[in-house]
Image 1 (cartoon, rainbow, N blue to C red):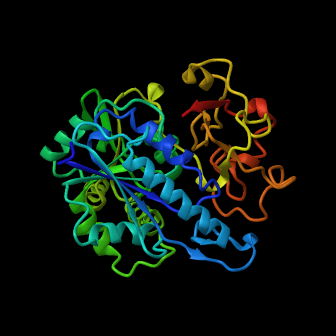
Image 2 (cartoon, rainbow, N blue to C red):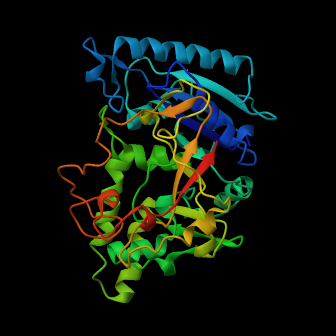
Length: 391
């Protein structure tokens, strides 16, 4: 595995530092993926800019932090390095796998950090495949197909980039047809009892790609990356717009044009089960900017929603009937991570809708409000139930 796959995990300053709890949770989740800890794992730590004013001016997304946060981040990286060197659980590679902490000297931002990793001398990425993920995207279900997926990609040159399922890609064929009027069902490719479904949007979630996909396509398309750039923002709407331009073509023309356009991006999501009703997300995103080091061993009720009465997540789906125009899945999840708790929201902020919302609601499909504030949802009993994931 170490000769086939490099795992690149991006990290940066967070409110939970100097705690290493978030990355510990991530590496525990790696145990769900057969063979992943046998790969060469790189934790790519971005640099940060120090804001000399008060902490209220901090912007974690853009890497502008207070002197205190910068000191906490430095301490966090020192603790992390010690745990890696000492092979302290869960930072324990398997077989010939390795774990390496690489520190960037100054703030790069997400996209530029990936480019820097590929351009480093001596090279730190020498494998034909790479898995790229963020420090707050966890594996929450078992993945037993990693090795077979890599073997399949070796034989199928059309397959350049494969995403693990998230809630955004559940029931994806139906969502895309409903939201964008693009019928992608005929372009799905069956494999090993599951299927590869073509994506219409370039997502930044955890995925496996050919290293050449990044060096020869992604990074060549954007040679002048800025600190604030994210690849999802650069490629996502571009890909979607290209596909939207062809949807009014005749059926035969649409099929040819879709294959032509999508061949360039060659990004798919893989489900190991071909029955949409039984498909489950593999990834869970816990925003690292919304959690902090726990102040007590047990989160209080206002910090953590109560779990469902059933352990079967699929049963919880039957409690919620989505609106006919809904683009979302009938399930919400939230993670419980040892050592972390959610940063309390400002008083009243959770009950007031934002002043402007320019996108379409994921519940009713209308523009002007978000799923959370959809007027079609009368009360909490009409909302999908919340599943608490123990990580």
